[in-house]
Image 1 (cartoon, helix red, strand yellow):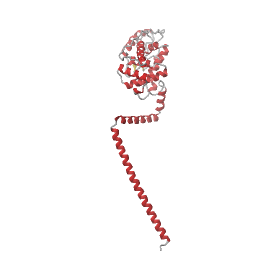
Image 2 (tube, rainbow, N blue to C red; image 1 turned 90 degrees about the vertical axis):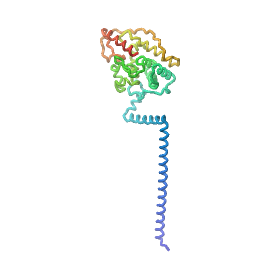
Image 3 (spheres, rainbow, N blue to C red; image 1 turned 135 degrees about the vertical axis):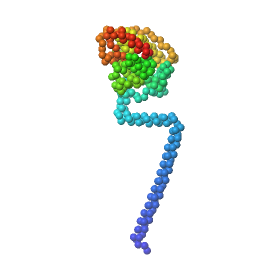
Image 4 (spheres, helix red, strand yellow; image 1 turned 180 degrees about the vertical axis):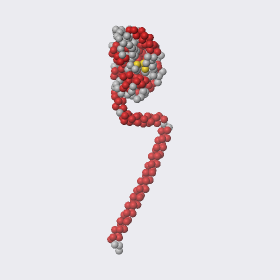
Length: 315
């Protein structure tokens, strides 16, 4: 007859062996399952890669989203996210512009889309950048009280929507702003080189245009100042051309069928009466005009010729 100690010892040995066998079996089972799962994941990755390689649009979309996420992370780390948000909420205030200079034409309203399509055909420019400019003109126009069609008309007459245009006297960009005179307005957008960024130039140009209209007390006089003819009686027909172009844009926005090759009817605009000439002023005092001019009487004749040349060359 076995002793009690022997029975207990045998029972413990048997129990240990059973537990060992159980744990071994469980481990082997988990290992097999893990291998199977890894194999399935590998197959899924391979299948996804094959599918992606055959779907260019999907791949491009995912790449764009990934790049946008990385860019957003960079802005967040550098503190630029708050500035970008401020610029979007106040389009003419401090802050960097929207990083994109293009927009999807499908995102425009009906009036905006009508105008964008007409500009594309009339000036032979790409639809995506034009869509962005039209969109921005509406946004900035609502905030500043300047009609978006007027903003676009100024761009049309000044540069024919060429963002790198430059006049002989130094007016630059879409709205032909005198960068040296208005360099302070570009500081919030990264400096004077922002004059060639379409959206930055648009926003600064609208600020200058608004100042000119306020100074003159009306649209015709404001355009007279904007083109730099504040000290002259003749602006070379500039104000009339802008207002005629705006009239076409208004008709297009309203849904009228206006041929892109139509020649606008330029009405006669009465000359703006000039104030009594004052002594020559520093450029800083002329910051409300798009082009800097001295106002001394003896300089007016010398300036009239280059100003008319600027109008002729820009238009």
